Amino acid sequence: MDEMRKEVLYSRAEIQKKVKEIASRISHDYAGRELIIIGILKGAFIFMADLIRELSIPCMIDFVRAASYGAGQETSGKVVMTKDIETSIKGKDILIVEDIVDTGLTLAYLVGWLKERNPRSLKVCAFLDKRKRRKVDFEADYVGFTMDDGFVVGYGLDFNEQSRYLPEVYLVKK
Ligand code: IMP
View 1: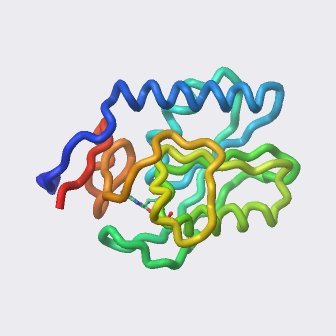
View 2: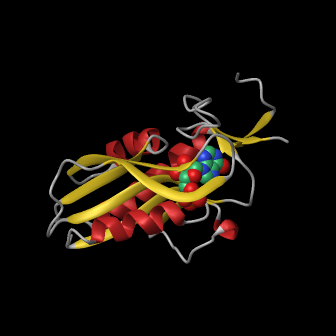
């Protein structure tokens, strides 16, 4: 099923450089603190794995699973949390890691959901940002690449569960 027409948007080298840059900012900002990184399944798993290995500070990890997209490229507009974290985040410094911010609905919802548990701080790191597509006011604290509209796959991102394994980010051609 990986026969969709697509072109490389971000190469392995560009991704690696960007991940190092973000990791260095995070390491600096959280130096001396106890950081818990929460990845949003499934899309963020590859970015998160690369990111934490570039940090120069220790961290703990956990995951949530959010479903907002059904099958296809358009959001359903409704966010459902289908897996919770397994760690207490009360009084802790939390960094949510996401693959891409599109409408902003998933992260706006998740941030509100986790803030109810009274973390010490809560920030968001997104590998990609489609800023022009926002439906709600939402800004990530750390962003890898800001991109125009368009659907991307690879580096953890899927189209109908296909293409997550690709090491580059590809723009799907219509
Ligand atoms: P949002 O709630 O609209 O911001 O959507 C966020 C989620 O939609 C991401 O975590 C992805 O799972 C998915 N998504 C948005 N844009 C893309 C894309 O271009 N490729 C793959 N998944 C996407």
